[in-house]
Amino acid sequence: MAVLVLAEHSNNALNDATARTVVAARAFGGDIDVLVAGHNARSAADAAAKIPGVRKVLHAEGEAFSHALAEAVEALVVPLMSGYDAFFAPATTTGKNVAPRVAAKLDVMQVSEITKVIDASTFERPVYAGNAIMTVKSGEAKKVVTVRGAAFQAAAGSGAAVVESIAAPSGPFKAAFVSEELQKSDRPELASAKRVVSGGRALASAEQFNQYILPLADKLGAAVGASRAAVDAGYAPNDFQVGQTGKVVAPDLYVAIGISGAIQHLAGMKDSKVIVAINKDDEAPIFQIADYALVGDLFKIVPELTSKL
Image 1 (cartoon, helix red, strand yellow):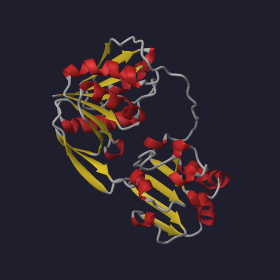
Image 2 (cartoon, helix red, strand yellow):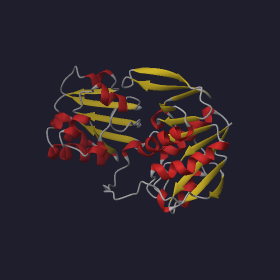
Image 3 (cartoon, helix red, strand yellow):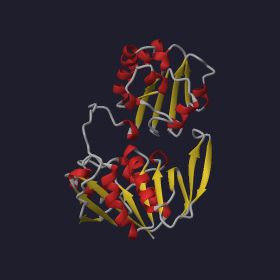
Image 4 (cartoon, one colour):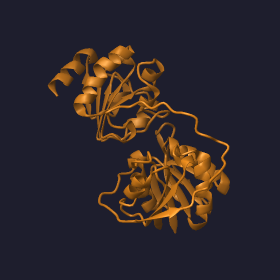
């Protein structure tokens, strides 16, 4: 058997989600090749070659891959699948964009957001906002799978896979990249951060969100998250959202401030190693999963906590 893993990268750097997806592919079995499709992405390909368990890295260069357009990546992946039994992609925005097109072209059903590989045809994935785990058995000849990275630990050590350049489809493609707006930050990227400080609706305004959440996050060297309620209220930008319809995280430390713990939010962070919850409602659902619970006024507690760090 052989598995093709789609690398998640920013052309000049490899995302941690790639190594986690490789671990899932190792549980599936067989040889593992990593596909790095990008523009001036040789450094990402070299980084992928160092992931333990990788047989070789397929490196495709082209301007159409500079922003991972699904149409272009699918045109590259589908012909390659004649030599592979499965296609694994991280369950990121890129993976969720590419994998369905690949599955459609291969005429197979996709298995989405797996959290465990039982064998080469059987997987586990969360349903009902993570309140139940479904066991899925796929009879497809080619498996197309997206992997929830938070459920897998990146393997320790270093590999030395061969990097092989492959030809890239030239197009033209119907889809074209137009523009993007990037928010620059010195803080860690939320999806892969080791520490996360999140704020909820109880912050009451964007000004107070920034005043109380950001200094604590900076003291901890943490990424900043938010509940959907806080995002919908305009206290925090969309890319801060943690939860079922936001980002799924599993940091070593998750600090939930003024977050009640709605089921949709818990689905995005309950796999965190240590959960600290600060809320004035001692019956808030977040306390049911918190390792450390502090009941009180966040507007008094958070400044004091920040000052003592």
